[in-house]
Length: 221
Ligand code: GLN
Picture 1: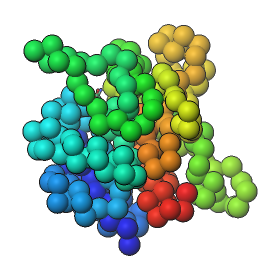
Picture 2 (picture 1 turned 60 degrees about the vertical axis):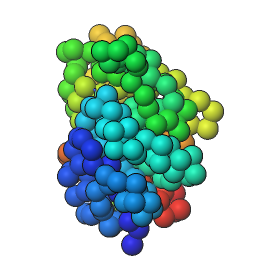
Picture 3 (picture 1 turned 45 degrees about the vertical axis):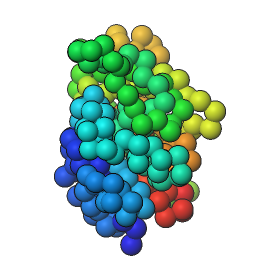
């Protein structure tokens, strides 16, 4: 069985541990370098990216995380976790000394934090999601859409070469359209071993995103 860690500094760690365990992985919290060294893959949960950023540095995990990511560790980032994996933040927060928040990077994307605006801070919608063909009821059939919950979510404003877009929010599907200005927005991406979603599959009972990630860890997807 693959052993997958959940970065357990802040955020919805328990929900990801449960989703991974349900989906066929051994799931363990990761707070120390030795724990990081022992996992085959890692989930960075949703929460607050500025806090997760500070805590990774306080816990001396930022450098070991960057090293393992560049060595090919499979990582799935959800919401704040997506921000932590992004090479660039369009609108980084700054601390009292004026230092911008940092990311671990690895995924060649630019994210915008809290992008969906005030009225849409939290919303739910159904998304067509590429890469879930393994879950189709009948081989070759379209997989069911993913019911996605967004909580002060980022979107992806730029994808680099080699980054595959897995899902987008279409303006006509959303309950409020003003912040989308008629533009579809990217909310799920993959680049080799790195997977990221703006939304939170761990809170809805959706298991297929975690199953996809486990397949990536196993080298099957
Ligand atoms: N807005 C948060 C951030 O910037 C992310 C919210 C979430 O993870 N649900 O970190």
